[in-house]
Length: 131
Image (cartoon, rainbow, N blue to C red; front, side, top):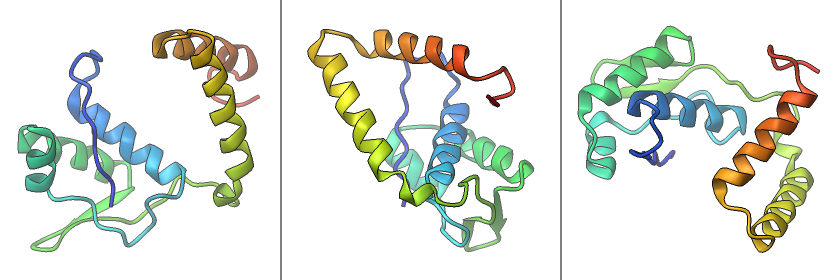
């Protein structure tokens, strides 16, 4: 089950953080159709977030066709964002982990890494995310 983490200093609305984290888990194949998302109460307990904020995030995911609420049962994943073969990204993940270890050893803070990564992503991908 997904565990949401809310960064209150990020400047990103909490519900959008939930949406982004859910989409990331869907893209990585950590959530698959049939999985149940944590209930609003479970998320509220774990993050001290207002349950209406959780429900707003779930409604957004439902609007995008990624989840559906089932009365009395919870919210379930019905879509995926994972591409075929996404589970085979272990070697790339290891390379990225090693690169991040080097960046950290080189004194780069998270914000430095994010800025560098975003700059390279912008050079490599078009605005629409295609190469």
